[in-house]
Length: 163
Ligand SMILES: NC(=O)c1ccc[n+]([C@@H]2O[C@H](COP(=O)([O-])OP(=O)(O)OC[C@H]3O[C@@H](n4cnc5c(N)ncnc54)[C@H](O)[C@@H]3O)[C@@H](O)[C@H]2O)c1
Image (cartoon, rainbow, N blue to C red; front, side, top):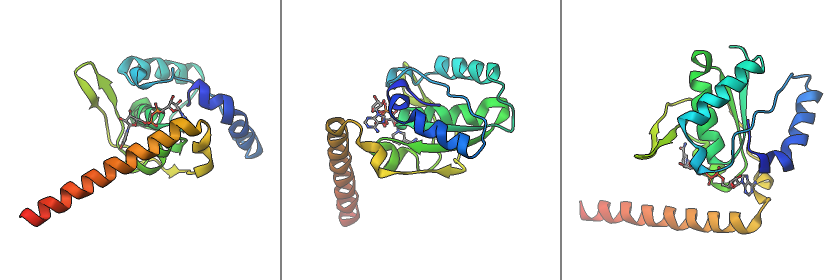
């Protein structure tokens, strides 16, 4: 499961890897972007998996950023009451944060990640080179994560000092 911009760059290589390993595979795309992190996307993807013949023995592989990982993990946790799930995170944020810990979810109009599950992937494949498609976007992403991490750790140590 992926989004069109990521599939365009990495879909062929992944499909070739599946073929080389003699693993039957079908690509399922969700629309790109946070605003599609919804239950209706989950429902549509579920329908496509059924039509593609995915049964309880299928493994859902997510190839993309945090949105694809969160939506795919949620779908894997409920599709046919749960199927295996592998994450291939392709953004820096997804590699250092969202692919770790098994949190999945979708948004409601009332807030982010209000519906979700815990679903540990059976494997997380991280290749730092994958996150370099759009260096400008990724540079901002990285800088923001570093600032957020520094701010959180400063707050935590201030709390420890004032206890
Ligand atoms: N589950 C968790 O523990 C957890 C933790 C942190 C964040 N999140 C979630 O992660 C989401 C944000 O993740 P994100 O920032 O990866 O967003 P995203 O998945 O929307 O990706 C951002 C953009 O980058 C594009 N992209 C994908 N791969 C790329 C690459 N290799 N190079 C450049 N661009 C690429 C995407 O197509 C998209 O347009 C949010 O929904 C957030 O709630 C989840």
